[in-house]
Image (cartoon, rainbow, N blue to C red; front, side, top):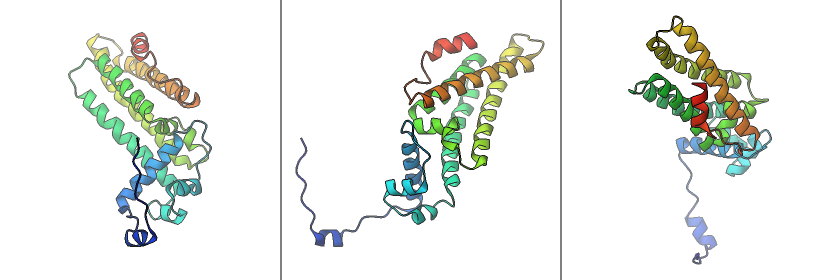
Length: 209
């Protein structure tokens, strides 16, 4: 049961102004709020005016930390890249078998999206429609880099199985896995986050790897 809070008099408010966040903290707060707004199923294009209103600041205050809205989205993409590829590097360096590594890489990416629905919309491009073209290009590069990571570990598997075309085999399998991942992400975002990307994941990965 909540306890009553002492009322604040006007003199208290005057002597205790609201603490302003530091520049770095405000930047993070802006990105967190943008990500939270993207988590709303069926959310329309987010404007800087709506973002500023949610933060209870002026639009000019936003532009003191980001030169443009595109730069805000780039901040989200940087977070996605850093979060995912730091984990993928750890997986690639582990002692697991190649197939296990590939499955783990796919699982890590889909689990990240499931925990961060707003980021999932960025990853599949839904949140980037009508935004700067370079944002979609950067997300395309993200998936190309992800596919490259898969190819490296899957080529090891093909070589271990004495394949006469290990590079081709790895390229095909990596392409199939990326298509699977993108499809799961799109279904997650477009179902209003009802169809989880990790649904029957282990069984699905056994079938395609």
